[in-house]
Image 1 (cartoon, rainbow, N blue to C red):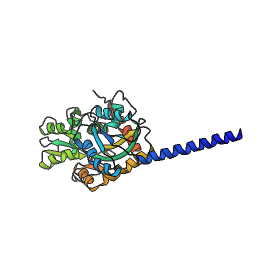
Image 2: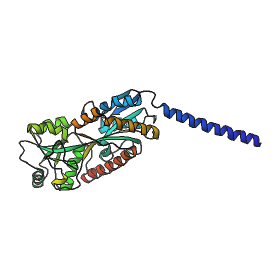
Image 3: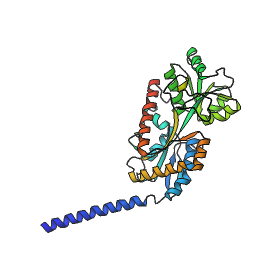
Length: 326
């Protein structure tokens, strides 16, 4: 009986050791086939361009092809849902952007929990915004914009790249902090919003600084304030919203990479390092700077904290403004 028990324990120990050895071998083998990176927007724009900029250095670092696949729509929901329901084996990731944090408050329901059903992998960049006006609008600085809005509640309108975008957060947050009422005019992207502001159809544009910069250089747009914590090197003479009378005001677009829940730590850490190294490559930094993107690299834990903070902040903005997707 004793010999049988010892034999059983010996077999059990061997099985555990074999399982651990197998796990280690599997971890070392990753990746052994192409990795899919799902992008939640159509081709073009900073989110898509970033994924494609990272593709080659990631492929070199990991030794397998990186396949960038666009699944646009639903403010990022379609792409995120696809990844959430993928096996947590390290072969399917998604990029997420600013709307990911606002969707829980903006949409009546989501097909996933935007925190619990994902694994934060890497936070890559922030991009700050500018409040600008058409050159023919008789508003010369940010104080005048706020004063005009107080005198004429709801009469001033601002164009953005869409509902739930950082530009929308920026306008809604200003309304709440300044006690004013603006009219939001959302477009399908920053490009159409810019064209209508230049055409004189909407007086105010809220956009990524890099979108406004070329038109500001020609004098067709007048930037009034930026949403960054410090003045932008692109607009060194333009004050921040915070220094224009609203301390603590700060809004940014952002970009990160996630995987499905349950992704093994070793894969998460290797992918995080590969993304961070890729984002530090001189050619990538040069492209980031040209697009007004500020590399903000973190650990997976750091990205998890950022997601929680951004979700809380945008939820607060939308609930106070009673903002829902129409």
